[in-house]
Image (tube, rainbow, N blue to C red; front, side):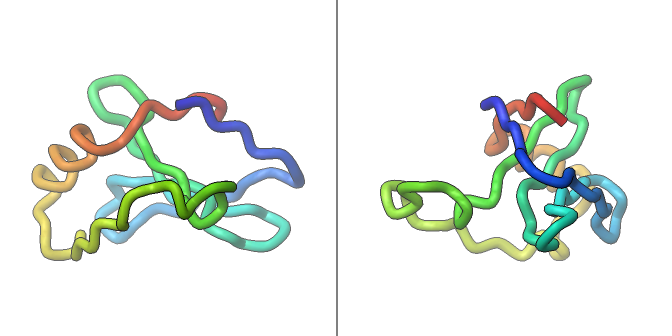
Length: 87
């Protein structure tokens, strides 16, 4: 996946356990994407609510990340997330 955000730029915040970076629009503070360096690659996911045709995607998966250990999070993200380019 290749991600390019257009506008005034992005700000980055980290989650509680400092594993993932959350990328927000500087202009509107909307969550754009989340990413984490896994095995030397920036892996992540975009906020599907911002995509055209979001209704063509499958149902969202509900999880409680705070209930997962750091290793469980990284393993899950490595399986589910794509490679982010352009950050």
